[in-house]
Each structure stands twice: as C-alpha cells, then as structure tokens.
Length: 102
Image (cartoon, rainbow, N blue to C red; front, side, top):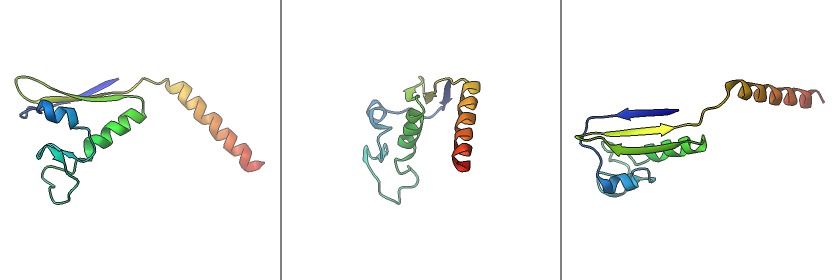
C-alpha cells in the first residue's frame, strides 16, 4: 500500500532532502538543531519519528520534488492478511488464558 501527500510550496533543496529524515535536522538552518524556541520551523523530530514508525512496520518513507513546485511525501507499508493476523491474535489470547488458569 502506498500513501502520498503533495503540497504546492517551494519544494525542498537537494541538500535538505539528503538530511530531512535525520534526527534534529532543521532545514531552516541547514544544521542539526535540537534547540527549543524555534517552534516556527519545528524541532527536527517529526520526520525522523515518522520514518522510524514506518520502517518498524516494514515500510519505506521518501520525499521528492514535484515540479514546477512543491513536493510529495509518500510511504509504503506491506499488505497483511487480516484473517491470518486475527487468527494469530486469538491463538496468543488463548495461550495467555491457559497460563492464567494453570
């Protein structure tokens, strides 16, 4: 499954795209930030956190410019078989119930 969000802003420079998912990277200064007080630009946590969450679930997160202006952020997640997932959850619940009785 792929989900994409596009905007019509100025786009993101190539240099910023290389680092935009780095923890504490703040594109407004071109350097890692981590300082409180620059709330207009953010703390450099959001995109790093998003990428981590997507990767933990087996997906990917990327950004690309969308000429003539703007950019597109997209992420993919692997498809799962909902029935198999529910069956596994039921088996785990049954195992915990048996342990509690035991």
